[in-house]
Image (cartoon, rainbow, N blue to C red; front, side, top):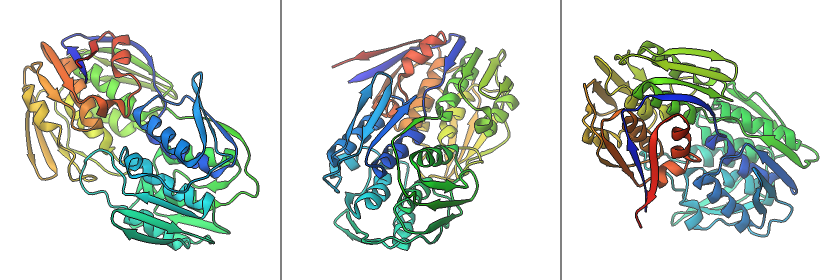
Length: 419
């Protein structure tokens, strides 16, 4: 079992290129099923979830593998329409394959997806969108049996701007006749990246980034190449680590406009932040201070994925900071682990109150989920002594090599296999 050992109390300094985005590449890998040919993905991160997607593609009959730094998918042949329970349980975003396989094959058989345990994340919106397009979906014993001999474009109104439901509607819409209009769509930058990939393949998709997306199946798809956008939550992690430990870092290859709701509270906490179109420079020269309440919300609001990470940066901030989690019900599972390190955090329902402490101490802690694990690493950067992180497989779902990147910024962190 791998563990991360972090010797805290070291100021960070240096430059880093931000990896490709997990939340972009996963739906794009599902979308590669739509074209019976080759898709080449540049800047694709090597993640546990990416490897899980590759296994799903191979199970379906596609060829998928690495060629140097590129991930190449050849979906010329698909000879299965089912995704086994074991593969579906590896990650939440496996559900996006439903819309893609249905559009390509006219039928699909999947089980309920897995992923981090963040509270109820119903797939009702996904299924309602597919049914609007003409899919017949039957739920039996934890499995979904879907058939769609003929899908017709229509208007799909989501009652909440779900990222996954938006992506599934976009992919299924690429297999429907006529025009599909998705209203109250999610507006995340990763949706724009999916749109760019689909357009590069030959489909007509417009409106991503707004609340209305229009999808029209392309007459003839073709082989394509696409560069995965940078991961904004990974960028937040390294900025938060520098803010917590102190120091000065430069992140390259990241659009600062995607991080505006995170950069603002970092400035409020006392960090100096300078941004250009694809570069962010952060300097933390003094102890941070508490900030105004943070309320998570769908994009362009404060991202729920950054909540735990920013919280970890503020554990030693002078004063009090309040977090209100409006997206997931169970996103404070990291709090008990932070308290083991000396943090003062009180949770009541969806509200967490952080009172800054003078000192954090290294301790054995367990990663509870992907972003909670990243938060523990951030706290470890600032703590005195050694922090041991176990269950780091959660972190590896979304970070290509967290120890490598933090070492590049001057951190003392190592990964050891304890057997």
